[in-house]
Image: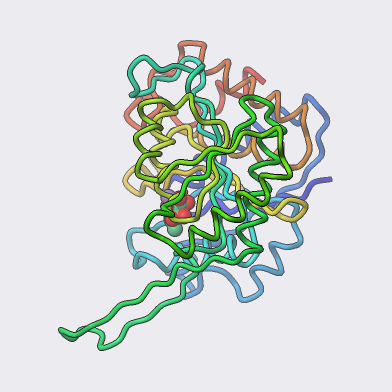
Length: 349
Ligand code: IPM
Ligand code: MN
């Protein structure tokens, strides 16, 4: 029996999560996958009501689950940074979810803004380091607000943290069994300490995977290749900050925020799954948000839980819904209702 914590969160989060759970339920009913869910009200509304985004024993509660399904964080009445830190980053850092897995896969029937590229050319995975780098929160001000103000924001890497995420990328390239290639994306020409460490660890770990091709791209060039030659990529491994940036680009080439999903993983431990999009407050409560990203995140969660058959059913249903010609577009102005899309995907399960 898998135990799943559901945190619908803010804005459109609750609406899209409802559809993800609908598709999960339909698939589990077919395969006999057993799970129980418990819902939590963590997020902006709770913060405005109680002054706390999450309770003090938040992480202890979360550790009792096998997986966490998150909708979205971000509330127009809460100062930027609070919800991100107290909910999202606390989960990532507190549960040591060191892999942020972000597939960039163009499904048939989905439009990409890239000219002359199709599903055959756009199918790779970004493995974003998720617990270190510029996100570590180390830094400070001197003479804050004065003309001589100094601000320091530290980019921190550990050998252990770098090694485990690079190893995950190599294992993934092996498991995917496609191009068997890992591309390290960094800025070692300028970040001559931090990304020098990344390059050395990449070489060292890479030696254990002689059958996997080792490739390299500077992050600026990577942005260019992702648009010009996305077919060159199989698995990309990169640091936290660059992974954040290039996966927004990745989301757009796979059809947009309406479809891009991610997993925050610590293999063997409780892990968290979420759509890449935000809470989109202006669409909240209107039943117009595209739930496919959340449905896809639920599918990634089911795969992580080892429920291969259920996961395949869910992915097949997503693919069939997309190629049915019944989904006009993947943005909130598509004219589709959120629940209608959930029903459609569930019907293909
Ligand atoms: C993401 C988001 C977060 C990040 C924000 C909301 C803190 O942009 O998941 O990509 O920067 O990681
Ligand atoms: Mn981001």
